[in-house]
Length: 70
Image (tube, rainbow, N blue to C red; front, side, top):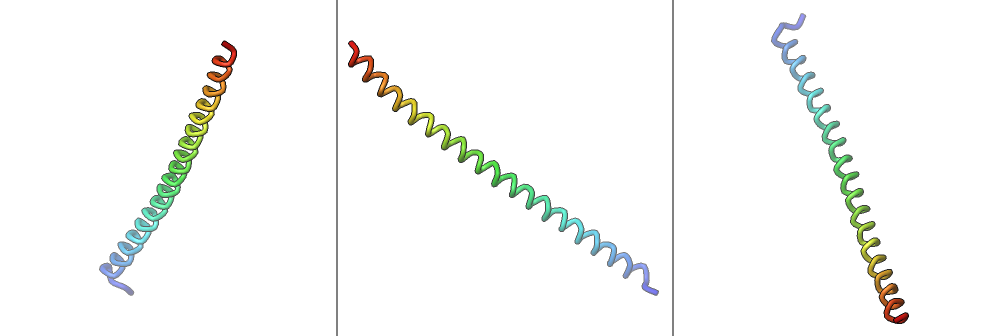
C-alpha cells in the first residue's frame, strides 16, 4: 500500500496538470477572441475606406454637376 506522501504527490501532480490544461484552454479561447477582434477591426477599416472613397467620388461628381449646371 502506498504511503500518504506518495498519494499526496500524485494528487498534487494531477491538480497541477488539470490547472495547466485549463490555462491552455483559456489561452486558446483568448487567442481566438483576439483573432476575431482583429478581423473585425480590419473589416471596419475596409468599410471606412470604401465609404471615404465613395463620398469623394460622389462629391466630385456632384461638384461637376453643380459647376456644369451654373
